[in-house]
Image 1 (cartoon, helix red, strand yellow):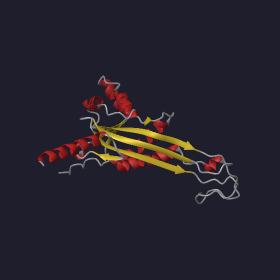
Image 2 (cartoon, one colour):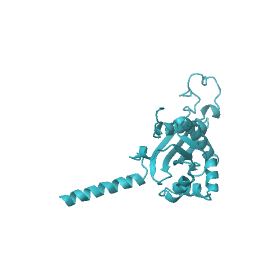
Image 3 (cartoon, helix red, strand yellow):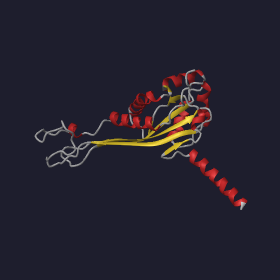
Image 4 (tube, helix red, strand yellow):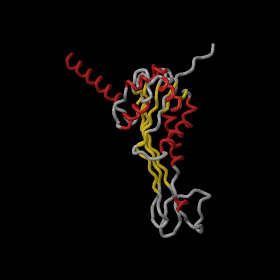
Length: 232
């Protein structure tokens, strides 16, 4: 019986280790609070497949949304400068390249960030869906904009995954009836039936709008920073 129980215990430990190394839809390190994360560096957003300007759009949305969360955020430019000073200029690319390939994190690269003293953790953002579909006014259907992203928070002390979560936001334009009848789904103040319909009136939300909504979800999902000690 002891042998069986011992085997089961080892199996459970192994399962937990695998779960910690493979990000799921939502994961938080069971000892997250013990890492005392106070400063987080934002790495450039990884876009799969690469789309011109998408990394800046998503990155800026994250910067704006995450600023009030309570952590001290380090910009990519400040992180690069610190790594160049530490003679480790390729660290950011090494971390992001692993994320791009869905490979295990580069522990040595993450710890190189930690050795600069600039951040307790890094936030890696990988966008897997970045699409916007519009429809012609002669075609019945509905346009849409969609972004899907997975966020990974890694400790720069140990290289461990501290948090990960998948996000997806989709925004649709009004439904278009190609026969010229009422455009369904418009809010008050939209088109009247007598108004000539244009492609603009049928367009879905912009990438900036959807990126902002997704960034707000990231802010809500990230674990809260450690509480500040009470004043004496």
